Amino acid sequence: MFQTTSHFRQLRLAICQPLQQYADVRATKVTRGTQSPLRNCKAGDLDWVIVRENSEGEYAGLGGRSHTNQSWELATEVSIFIRHGVERIIRFAFEVARGRPKKHLTVVTKSNAQRNGIVMWDAVASEVAKEFPDVEVDKMLVDAMTVRMTLKPETLETIVATNLIGRDEFGAETKHADILSDLAAALAGPTSNLDPARANPSMFEPIHGSAFDITGKGIASPVATFWTVCVCEKGVMTRDLGGSATTVEMTTAVCEAIETKLGKARS
Image (cartoon, rainbow, N blue to C red; front, side):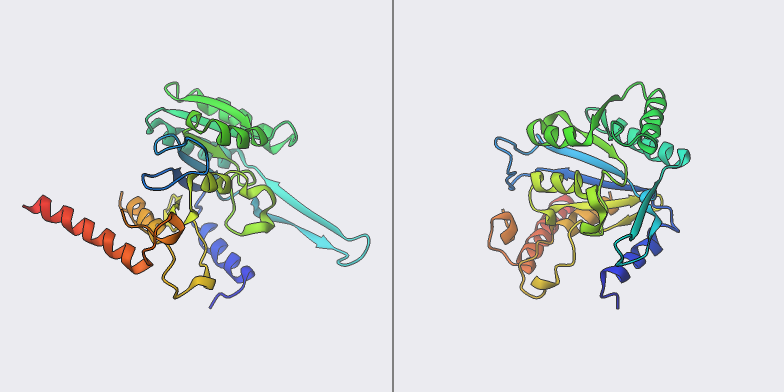
């Protein structure tokens, strides 16, 4: 049993890295029946797909510590950017954007402060953009991006970010990694509604954690699991959505709705 964060990390890396699951795709939207904390933000105003590079950057795992617990202790964290890796995630994001209604892609950067890897990221994005003349593209610094996501959510559709800027699944140890995806989740509503997918080859899972502290209480929302199944196969709310239904009751309601629709289709 994997009980610790380190064991969990080892398991995830053992899956993601050998399979080269370089694209982490996160659809974020305000759905009917849920309320965004943004004033006047309704269903349709916030409908984003965030594409995060999932194999390089800080995910490369290079670095270390020496002279531990000494006043001269040294720690290094190395981010790796390979042109092949940058090209494939940027091209993947353009293909996602091309298939969406607005055909609009925002490339997130921090090249004003990170002078090497992210500068190459920007250059590759400009090169790949020439292959997609039908896709409108713009570039935003990550700090300005948080403001835009909050004040002008309707101006965004598809977003591509590096591992550092996008999000890592392992929590607080990932420094800036929660900037965009966690903000998006907060703006859209409960994280229990969200699903991520890792592409090429694919792996699907809800974005929320295991939440062992509420195990057996019947208050967990199954919606993210439903969305995950929907992505994989391409009135009743739990408490986090403002309702009073238990997990079983909400799942039953969804199953009954599906059965009703299937019955009408057969008749």
